Length: 221
Image (tube, rainbow, N blue to C red; front, side, top):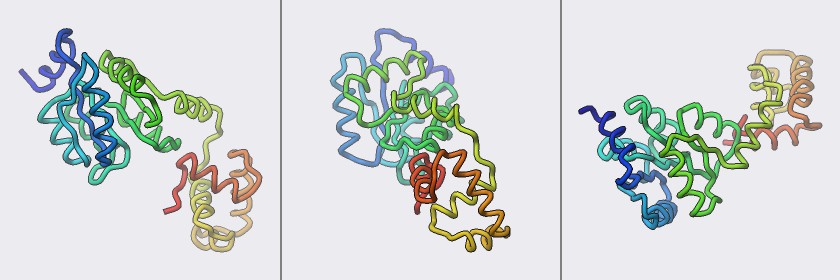
């Protein structure tokens, strides 16, 4: 029997507990999630990992029914881990549990194949129920994440050049510096900024910077 078939068989066996893997680089978070899960009569933690590479190895070894994964980890990050697992185990059911909720984080996580995108401010009961629902094939997003997704549907996408200008703005570059960096005129930079402000619904560079960082369109580091 293949490992994928074995995983599927376990997932549909009603009398067995839901087997869960936890991957998070914060030991306290892992311990808290493990306590919540092990207290449930219908589930159990089979493995814990503090980095993406270990999590992948443990997943392949234990073939859990559900994996709960943080986004930011050493080695492979959460998205890379999900992509790696899904390549080898297409039926994998994976939950992102994180404090990060930028548009970029949400988009990358769901595109990678996560079945749920949850935030760490959720209650223990909500986490347990989310694991059950994902185990039964459902897709779940935290209410705050669902709101962000709905907002994105009404936004006008930025062009590649507008994104480049926005990233330069976030890094504190003046129009002249942006023009030199992107090999365009200062007048063209001003045109792009006008379009950026309209699309983002902001009135200044400061507001554009704050919104870009909040949505994950650009990072300060």
